[in-house]
View (cartoon, rainbow, N blue to C red):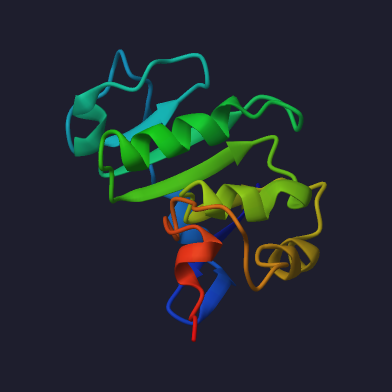
Length: 145
């Protein structure tokens, strides 16, 4: 069973096993507003998805960035504010991109090291580009004079 890590007030932490086990994920064709929704990367985000209790996006492969783009669209275009979880081929090398794109929970597969994943979520103290978690670019965040 994958290990769930979630954003907390003081950083990132391993969540309890019960937080993940009780969720009944629904595919879009079976989904009702308020339920937990599982999306694949080949779907166009619909406005009603913003009513989901939580959304998981399936990463089909380590080198497939469509899930990152889908997360940005959900957060920016649809204004989704609930839990956004990465599932599937989640790899610690891209966790910091996931955070920048709006994910606030990740299921780390059993074959990955959770402690390394926790260390690599925030490897940089500052980034140049605006992101979902900090929309202003670096030049606007700088204090001048």
